[in-house]
Amino acid sequence: MNEENAFWPVLTARVSAEKWILILSALIAIVLIASGMHPGIVFLFWLVLAAALLSRSVAAAPPSVPVMQASAAGGDQLDTLVIVLNALDMPVLVVAADETVLLQNLAAEKAFGTIPQNTYLAARVRSPGILDMVRETISTGKINQIEHSERLPSEAVYIVRVAPAEISIDGGRQLYILSYRDISQARRIDRMRSDFVANASHELRTPLASLRGFIETLQGPARNDVKAHEKFLGIMHEQATRMSRLVDDLLSLSRLELKSHIAPDEKVDLAPLLGHVIDSLSPLAQDVDVTIALDVPDAPVFVHGDRDELIEVFENLIENACKYGQEGKKVEVTLSGGDEGSPVEVAVRDFGPGIPTEHVPRITERFYRVNVEASRSKKGTGLGLAIVKHILTRHRARMIVQSELGKGTLFTVRF
Ligand code: ADP
Image 1 (cartoon, rainbow, N blue to C red):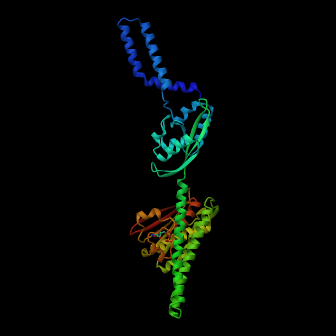
Image 2: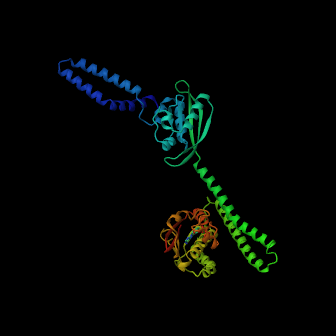
Image 3: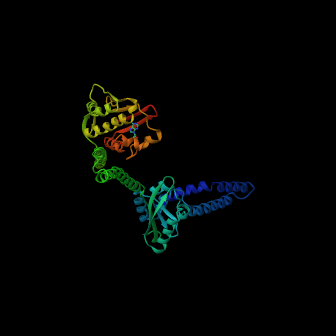
């Protein structure tokens, strides 16, 4: 930005700011002329007064334009710095040695609001940790960084770093670059990962502890008890199966995570696929005394997808509907759409107890169950819907859950 370009907008702004003094002095001038003073002399005096007023204002005025552009008038290096900092997605403030803010990039403006130029850093940055760190860097010239949490406008964790930078404005001036690296997302992922490991270990530890207990009993007190052998071996088999189901689900999840960014490109007709899933689930449906009704259009309904993964999705949804909606006695599976650009939808409806509203947003989280005991007794791992969600994300499809207590639940998959 050059000097001339900066001068006219500032002058216009100052005329507007000083307009009342200018108007008042013009009125006084008119009164003086009316009372007999020479108009030329009065006009000359008014002109000198106005020029003095405006030149003082222009020189002293803090620019009302955002810090970033106003400061760019400082020189070539600063111009380049403005361009570079604005291209960064992390908030950056450039602070002078007197602790005033000289520049603020666009990301900082978005994160912390506009900071007028020459504002003291302490007036906008309340954290004593950051202020002490900046002061230390100003006095020692050493790079410093600290971790800092913000609560407003939303919770965020930053690594705040300050580093000295020599920029040749005003004949060489020491500046300090204060940058905020947002690590909130990384923190969230870390927490999710450790929660996941803790949950997975806990899920595996329970059947393992039960297996060890039974092995010890069979080796000790029940060594010669044939009846106990039979009973305990049955339970041990159940626990081992539970563990292998869990390991299968965990492997399935990690496989899906690896290819989550690759969209599947097979063309799959959903009508026969749903028929196949329902056939394979009919023994389970019979066990729990549930009838599954399938309603599909006559014409094929194609989606781009991975056949095996789509089978896994509908197996999970229909199995859940049979298990948790058992008392409703029936499950309806409906395939619709696909013609004239309408979205393809698969609806799985049960008439069971439903899911309490507060649980609905969380049921696709790993290991989240509305009722842990009910899920375990129905051979659930708490991973089924998490797998479904992963597969659907990869298929660019989404799942809508509608549930009414006492009436049942409707899971809709929309492609
Ligand atoms: P699980 O292996 O426990 O079945 P899911 O991830 O498949 O795990 O489901 C998570 C939880 O969501 C279940 O434990 C159950 O509480 C609830 N849920 C899922 N489907 C239904 C349904 N059709 N009706 C009622 N609750 C359901």
